[in-house]
Image (cartoon, rainbow, N blue to C red):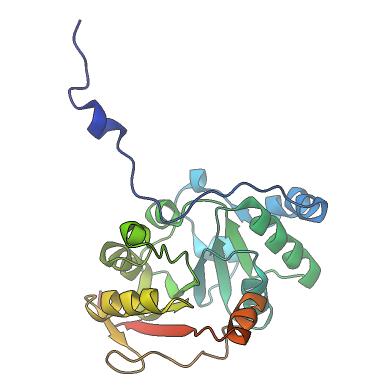
Length: 236
């Protein structure tokens, strides 16, 4: 009897994940919002490539946020920018439930959600050139050197984002880890097809459209810095 797979280890190898699925149950209010609102505002990977016009029933600038956490800042942005459409991607169910609760509370119609891996959503669901902005706020810094490879902001991933952005679209990154900020700056500064909105190797002041979260305020009170980076796509 022969083994049909001569390279079993290669067959079983999995891609490096930039996130850890933390356990945690939804609160009763999050579960109720999830049950009632997900059918209206949730998107699923299995449906494949979306037609943004059909999803939002209009054509407007589209913003993708990767890793929206508990969703407060994303809901705030959607509520204060009704002329834009927002897609949030998050793997943690309690955060999804929380954001759905905020959508219901604020009667938002310009926000949709994926509960899935952002890399797979980009590959399978987001059309090329369809985004005006990608925002990644306070991603896991993976601060131990041996874990740095797990950081989501890597050259290959940035080029994946580039294909999804329209020319003139912007990647907006923010972190409260100085080492990660320097890593982000190095990756973005050498990325083909992008230019730093604020000048070479320059960090940006916090744009008004990015709300300050409770987490960020707490860090500031402890003397923690926050670094924003804005890079514009200049070429396909």
